[in-house]
Image (cartoon, rainbow, N blue to C red):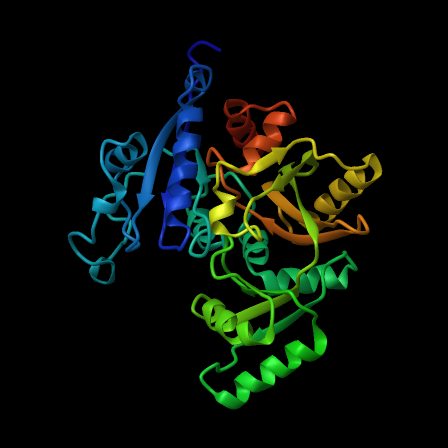
Length: 355
């Protein structure tokens, strides 16, 4: 309606995380979508960039990063250090925000940290709350809950807070892996995203190096059996009612779906995936059930493995702040489901407002 107040969207991006660059790319896509002709009638956007030192920049500087007027890597730790500030948000004008849209991928954001902070502003946010975010980020807790619900998963082992500098401990862990799992294996830090810190292990000689790589990110480590699978993904949006998107498949040129292949333009994306109708429906049902189990709502992307030899479905993980880059599956899935990127970001705001 003419004269109707526009909702001010607080777009938070960057962050003290190993997925800093991905967050910036996602934010640029979302910023452009909110500034489309149709969305400018309903929304204004204030950007809030958190640099790699954890400092918040004012909205003018943050917007210039999104428009390319300044380079984000030129923003250094400036002024008074965070430790010396009485209020680390000092000078950040966020009083007129109507809805928060956090796009902080990885830890210190996607793990529920930013959701806890924003809760004190008493303003709604796009995405799920603290509990769902924390559970969705922690692969070990997530898989434990899925196991209790008998949701299908690949075989896995968990190591928590082991001292890998101790030779005896190292040998014990390797022995347990060899005893309980079959090669190839995937060794993962419990808390990370975009496949960062993950290694594919083909034989015993590669195990310890993979454990060390994961341990650099998180002292809690997950080891999974690797199967010959297809990578299948499903988007979810909604609150009381969760709606699944079309099912998509990613075919990649690399040996496995690592960080580089996730953001590679040469990947072949098929939406809808060429799979049996019954399997498609089962994947959608498991996607909704898994999100309900972790109290995940708003929006998320649920990742699956489909074993090539048997067509058996395995639930992999849930991403509570999936990527919005030009190569990201989440917006592609919803575009194929009838919501282009401009419609999608507006829909996510409406969901957060229960409209």
